[in-house]
Image (tube, helix red, strand yellow):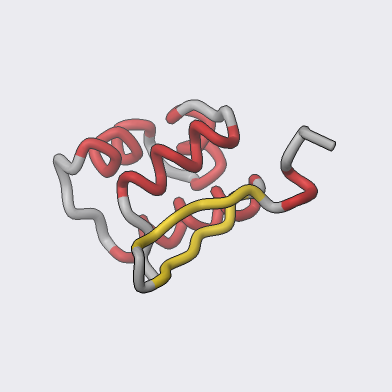
Length: 81
Protein backbone atom coordinates (compact mmCIF):
# COMPACT_ATOMS: atom_id res chain seq x y z
CA UNK A 1 0.00 0.00 0.00
CA UNK A 2 1.41 3.39 -0.97
CA UNK A 3 0.78 6.03 1.66
CA UNK A 4 -0.99 9.24 0.73
CA UNK A 5 0.10 12.85 1.25
CA UNK A 6 -2.62 13.18 3.89
CA UNK A 7 -1.25 10.20 5.76
CA UNK A 8 2.24 11.72 5.71
CA UNK A 9 0.92 15.01 7.13
CA UNK A 10 -1.18 13.19 9.69
CA UNK A 11 1.61 10.87 10.79
CA UNK A 12 3.99 13.80 11.22
CA UNK A 13 1.41 15.61 13.32
CA UNK A 14 0.70 12.54 15.46
CA UNK A 15 4.42 11.94 15.97
CA UNK A 16 5.07 15.65 16.50
CA UNK A 17 7.93 15.79 13.99
CA UNK A 18 8.67 18.56 11.51
CA UNK A 19 9.26 18.26 7.80
CA UNK A 20 12.95 18.84 8.48
CA UNK A 21 13.03 16.00 11.00
CA UNK A 22 11.20 13.63 8.66
CA UNK A 23 13.52 14.57 5.81
CA UNK A 24 16.53 13.73 7.99
CA UNK A 25 15.00 10.41 9.07
CA UNK A 26 14.23 9.48 5.45
CA UNK A 27 17.50 10.77 4.01
CA UNK A 28 15.70 13.31 1.82
CA UNK A 29 15.54 17.06 1.45
CA UNK A 30 12.78 18.96 3.25
CA UNK A 31 11.56 20.23 -0.11
CA UNK A 32 10.77 16.65 -1.15
CA UNK A 33 8.55 16.24 1.94
CA UNK A 34 6.86 19.59 1.39
CA UNK A 35 6.17 18.93 -2.28
CA UNK A 36 4.74 15.50 -1.52
CA UNK A 37 2.48 16.79 1.25
CA UNK A 38 1.10 19.62 -0.88
CA UNK A 39 0.63 17.45 -3.96
CA UNK A 40 2.94 19.61 -6.05
CA UNK A 41 4.83 16.55 -7.25
CA UNK A 42 4.24 12.89 -7.97
CA UNK A 43 7.21 11.34 -6.17
CA UNK A 44 9.01 8.17 -7.15
CA UNK A 45 7.90 4.99 -5.43
CA UNK A 46 11.30 4.81 -3.73
CA UNK A 47 10.75 8.26 -2.18
CA UNK A 48 7.36 7.23 -0.80
CA UNK A 49 8.89 4.04 0.53
CA UNK A 50 11.69 5.91 2.31
CA UNK A 51 9.18 8.26 3.92
CA UNK A 52 6.92 5.39 4.97
CA UNK A 53 9.82 3.41 6.46
CA UNK A 54 10.98 6.48 8.39
CA UNK A 55 7.50 7.21 9.76
CA UNK A 56 6.96 3.57 10.71
CA UNK A 57 10.33 3.49 12.48
CA UNK A 58 9.21 6.59 14.41
CA UNK A 59 6.04 4.81 15.54
CA UNK A 60 3.35 5.30 12.88
CA UNK A 61 1.36 2.42 11.42
CA UNK A 62 -0.59 2.83 8.19
CA UNK A 63 -3.68 0.88 7.18
CA UNK A 64 -6.25 0.67 4.43
CA UNK A 65 -9.79 -0.70 4.62
CA UNK A 66 -12.82 -0.63 2.35
CA UNK A 67 -13.80 2.56 4.17
CA UNK A 68 -10.52 4.37 3.45
CA UNK A 69 -6.99 4.84 4.73
CA UNK A 70 -5.69 5.78 8.13
CA UNK A 71 -2.86 6.02 10.63
CA UNK A 72 -2.40 4.84 14.17
CA UNK A 73 0.51 5.15 16.55
CA UNK A 74 2.08 1.93 17.74
CA UNK A 75 1.30 1.31 21.37
CA UNK A 76 4.90 1.81 22.50
CA UNK A 77 5.05 5.17 20.67
CA UNK A 78 2.00 6.66 22.33
CA UNK A 79 3.00 8.79 25.35
CA UNK A 80 -0.35 8.16 27.04
CA UNK A 81 -0.60 5.32 29.60
